[in-house]
Image 1: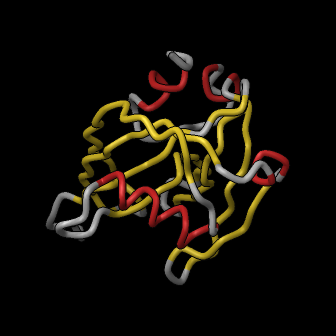
Image 2: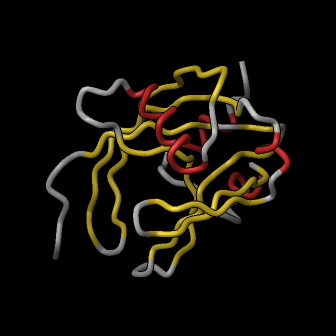
Length: 147
């Protein structure tokens, strides 16, 4: 079995609009499972996580963020496409600067050579178990509300 050889550092942004959350849709072909996670991406060496968050949103969907607030760190041990992985996620609550993003039902973007979709989904679809949200523990940050 192929395995990852390093821990990946990520910065992800939780963007809420009432009961909706903006998430990226993924698919694991081995598990034949659709799942969702907050948007963001890898932190480059020497780059503060907040800067990585801003850069990733700019690169992926040309969006600027505001009201950025650190929520915490999640350690994620997982298997994707049959390969074990390990991530440390710096999680931030934030908002879009441009209100147009709150009006879009879905947005297609490229992540490397893969085409992905970001979508607004009602949080209750995750809390009910209807849809899968990764990583484990992320749902706790969504259901805490906005302080």
